[in-house]
Length: 395
Image (cartoon, rainbow, N blue to C red; front, side, top):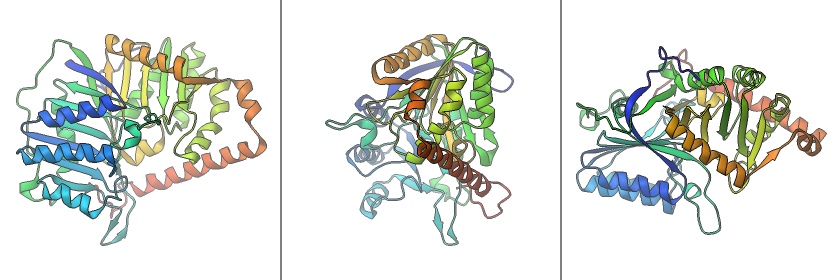
């Protein structure tokens, strides 16, 4: 496959480590926080007030108390339920803390762009970008397997760009000068691993739809095979057309979805698309052990993408999303083999015959209804986050 360099400047000189949900991911996050010396940016959609969330917040508190300048930005909708005592413990520790885009303001209810990205950066030299929130369900508990998701730990020149993104999200208008993030990376470090990658954004309000474009480009350019792990999978007409065309070219496409999702309406809407997918000779597998929360893909063993972006219009137009696009055969082949092992060991294939047997008239209607309702909701979200709305507040 070919990546159009005029649109996406993939850069060499990176070191990349694949992370998977479970204890190893949270241990890696905690280590990055504990080793920070100068500053930390921590931005995510959800931190639950449970054992896992408290563990990570405690690590941030330790960092702030030893003099590390610590910025914590949580989405106001995703994490709007934290107790006052928990918030007080964060603010009293010296952490610079703020909610992103409050849903309730002095002017009443507002529906605006959500911070759905999950990024941790320390000292401008290392960043973790992925799809995991910070809660027990991503860690796993006794007798209950963690939700499946992935992240990457990145070191190298692109860290300067990551810092720039995080600063723009943090440094909203009218923020006090003493709370602004002014950190800079003067001499970006290159690594001999020499992995080529690009950090991609979706931020409709800032005219950024880079992740969506990268998926479209990958679908258009694919030549042999494609694996997609997708939670909340509801691609638009353009993406469905590109998948169909790739299949007609002979590309072997596998899509892995949740056998049982935490979002039943989204699950039913996705099932409504099974007929289209299977009729176009695209294979469907369902992940069995727990909820599938991953948002990743590999194409032709050369390109992969990992991050917070779901293939639906909520991620296109109503959320801030960050993915890492990796144009490296060595990394992608290893990641592809990891995904294949999961498919072999933890998934079941949905055949066309099986799908037809389990469909009823009621399930067809329910799927159609869910699909239409979610499409309507996406249109409303698009309108509410449009720049034409003069009352919209970006942060």
